[in-house]
Structure formats: C-alpha cells, structure tokens
Length: 220
Ligand SMILES: *[C@@H]1O[C@H](CO)[C@@H](O)[C@H](O)[C@H]1NC(C)=O
Ligand SMILES: *[C@@H]1O[C@H](CO)[C@@H](O)[C@H](O)[C@H]1NC(C)=O
Ligand SMILES: *[C@@H]1O[C@H](CO)[C@@H](O)[C@H](O)[C@H]1NC(C)=O
Image 1 (cartoon, rainbow, N blue to C red):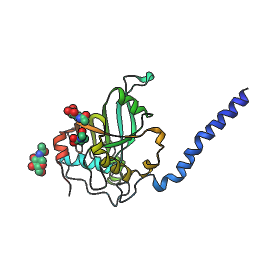
Image 2 (image 1 turned 90 degrees about the vertical axis):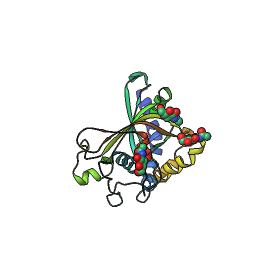
Image 3 (image 1 turned 45 degrees about the vertical axis):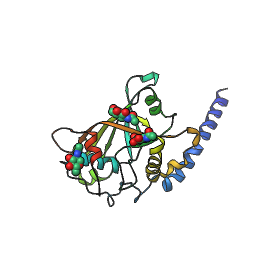
Image 4 (image 1 turned 90 degrees about the horizontal axis):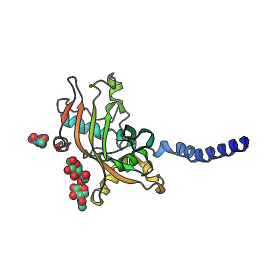
C-alpha cells in the first residue's frame, strides 16, 4: 500500500517537475530582457543615481531600474488571515529609458497575492538598489539609506483597455518569458495606484514624496 502510494507520489512529483526542469533549461535565454532591455544587474549600463536631495527623482530612478519588487498585501489565506503577507513580483514601469513611474504587474488569479488583493486592494511595494549591483559595488549594506530604497503604498487595480498596450509592452520587453506563461492561468495586467511614497536615500529618516512630485519628474 505505502509502496504504491510512494510510487505514485514520486510519479506525480516527476510529472510536476518535468515542466519546471524544461523551464529552467530554456529560461536563461528568454527569462529576462537582459542588457539593453532594462536589466541593470550588470554595472555597465546602470545610469548614474540622481542627486540624493531630489527624492522624487531618486524614487523614479529606483522604480525604473528595478524589474521586480516585494509586494505586501493583507492575507486572505485562512492560516494567516488579516496578517501582512509579502511576495516577490516581476514588474516594469516602462521600457528601458521610458519609465512612466507606475509599476505594472502581470498577475494570475491563482497567485496568493492576487487572492489577497481581490479581498483588499491595498498594498505596499518596496524596491531597492540592492537589487542592482549598485550597493555591492559601493559597499553599502541593503539596510543603509545610502543603498537607496523606496516604499510605495496604494491600491492594485486592473489596467484598463487604453493603458493595456503600454503595460504589456513595458512588461514583456523586460520579462520576455512572460509571453510564454500558460494562458490557462488567466494572466491580467495590473498596476499600483500610488498614494504614498517614502524614500530612504540618505541619513535623517525617510523622505516623503507626493505622487504629484513623483509623476512630475521627467527624464531626458
Ligand atoms: C484608463 O486609465 C488611465 C490611467 O489610469 C486613465 O488616464 C484613462 O482615463 C482610463 N481610460 C478609461 C477609458 O477609463
Ligand atoms: C487611485 O487612487 C486615488 C486616491 O486614492 C483614487 O482617487 C483613484 O480613484 C484611484 N484610481 C484607481 C484607478 O483606482
Ligand atoms: C514639476 O516640475 C517642474 C519643473 O521641474 C517644477 O518647476 C514644479 O515645481 C514641479 N511640480 C511639482 C508638484 O513637483
């Protein structure tokens, strides 16, 4: 009995792992956009950090150079209902050099975060230059404000028809693998509607930036 159960469990695991292994094998080539597509892991193409006193510009910079973030939602899972819950999500605020500031996501109703957001759309997103090699290169610890990081709070909403083309292009150019994600998962485009912004880019506590100041920033 146990032998048979163990055997079918192993077969099930093998069946579940097979697509994952195939994905691992093909992922490096198309998993991320790579240099020139907005992945700033490698030092060379990372644009210089804006002046730290211009917190709104620093915030836009961090949002644009990060291609993922940790999104905190309020859990709807019975085991941890009502508690803070964070997950890593791929994102993009625009094609390289053309970020508009609003972080776009490609979500599936099957994700824990999407389930949480269905009940409570409030969410907080954090992104850090520790995700690039800026901080390592400069010798800044991720928790140091010198390793610039930002906290964006707001609500996650579905992207409307008008904005969908930009959202899709922004995400797919930096996350080419998304194009191949199974359609059975009912992926949809969403964005963080930002209401509050905190910037940690220097000593002296977080700086408050308004969404108006944040979206007002233009890059050449
Ligand atoms: C779609 O969303 C954008 C950005 O939030 C907004 O400016 C636009 O008015 C919306 N369009 C429609 C048709 O609701
Ligand atoms: C975004 O947030 C603002 C402020 O809370 C709100 O007035 C607006 O309706 C929201 N927009 C969407 C698309 O949810
Ligand atoms: C928007 O930017 C312009 C030009 O840089 C500046 O003069 C203005 O004060 C800014 N407004 C806000 C609300 O940040």
